[in-house]
Length: 442
Ligand code: GDP
Ligand code: MG
Image (tube, rainbow, N blue to C red; front, side):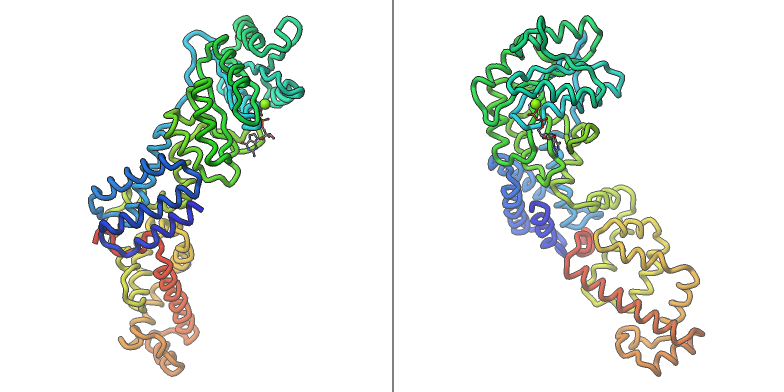
């Protein structure tokens, strides 16, 4: 998947102090493959890579972030940008009703979206009217009526006098009805075909011409992959639209379609539909989509915090302790326990990093008394024992316990805990946790 690939790209940047030309090229290659695998259209991939490379080359070496984090941040920023930056708000007409028309292939989720949009608007004190202008399929009108009932939004359906059999007449009549009954928003559900065809396109264009919508939304299934671009372009040429609603984001599509459509059509993505229920609906947030595409979990949050909240030096100190190439010793263990306790907020940050939550638990399970005891025990060891705890046999344990005023079981507990921590550190270093890669900016 895209996320796996990107993760492995960033992992390979671990431990680099500075991004070299080769690093940037290698990273760009991997990101390119990852995006292509996620069904992002080739021209979009090219444009994206060019921007990421340009920024990575020009990037100042950050004190707060190591190179891997820096690249993640650049990729994330560029993803947000290519997805449209800010969330696009619905434009209301100066003179009501605001007419919203939905267009898209059959099964893309138009009728479902009409209900969601209606409910969402009604919750914000609008008085929407849903309009059944899909007269293509026998059940389409009934389906919208069911959706409207569930959403508690009235539905305008064709009946004698409303232009039975003629979707253009139904649409036109619905706007008049809205004016009469003070509906401030009209949502027109239209017919779709399984594939793009000229008859369907013409019908949508005729409805458009009859009611001059304030917003035409192109509704598209996020799962359709590479086809998204062709379909989006066909609708742009055939009907035109102001914004995009991306549906079925609850599926496992990572969002390649979103990247492509936004870039190729220049139209913003306005809504995201994430399930069959009426509430599975939100405004589209480019930053959330970027995180989804990256799938780096809370690492992005961590980066934000590392950058903004914490003193760069503290982060650097932390990272260099965690990432030095030397094996982890009892001295490090002691130092880390003390430091992590003092840096309370940073140990919370650890909890956000995949794999690091155990570390945080370890630290949080230590109270002051524990820490005193641990300190006493480690101080009672010889330097040789601290550097190489494997040599701490039974008689040494007894000596250490006596010297520190503790029990042998305390010494045993500490040694066990240390070996666990050491194992964890080794695993983290070899798995190349982002954020574990060398002292930031060093
Ligand atoms: P239309 O032909 O464009 O009107 O599409 P419909 O609204 O009838 O939706 C087609 C199918 O997709 C229906 O079974 C919907 O329940 C389902 N659907 C619509 N939106 C979503 C969504 O966001 N997630 C999921 N999982 N299913 C959806
Ligand atoms: Mg429908």
